[in-house]
Image 1 (cartoon, rainbow, N blue to C red):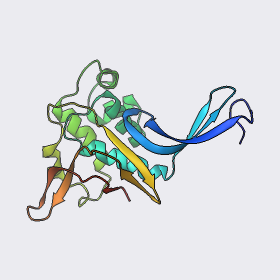
Image 2 (image 1 turned 135 degrees about the vertical axis):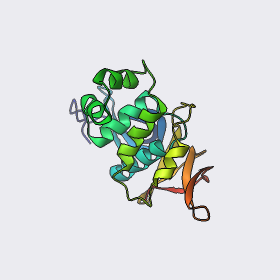
Image 3 (image 1 turned 120 degrees about the vertical axis):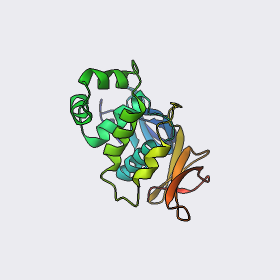
Amino acid sequence: MKCIVCGSETTTEALENMPMVGLRRVTLVAVRVRRCGDCGEFEVEIPHHGALIELVTRALVNKGGRLDNAEIRWLRSVMGWSGVELARHMGVTPESVSKWERGKMSQGPTADRLIRLMVASSWPPEQYPHQAMTLVASDDNAPLVMRLKHEGQKWLFDGPLPQTLVADPTQHKWVAVRALEGREAGG
């Protein structure tokens, strides 16, 4: 296969672990990577891209601690908004959004929950009931760390999983738990 940049025929292909663009602590396990031996350019093949984006977005919305700067930027981009548009929807200044995304200022818990709610508002209520918001945006602001691998038609968690929210049918609310390794993610 030819290099997409220099046209060289000296490309190699291998399965590698790669950080997800925009979320360096999310690792895609054993994805196909093509590298050019001449110019060093590489391209990563990501199967079922839409399912992966949905899975990572849901994990961020469900994350227990506050969103970090990269996670805010990720969710904003998933909504297809510029920083100015996010500021307008939230009723804050564009400078505030810029400072959050550059890590120069932390958003408060209300702003954090509002960002998540704007993303989750397009989901059916049974997939993300509003009472789940009481379990997110705590003072802990550790970034989301997870490893994902593609198997067949699905993305699966690989290794230790982040704390996540699950529906508890006996209590009619969502509760924070640690998911089991190897559990299907997305669908």
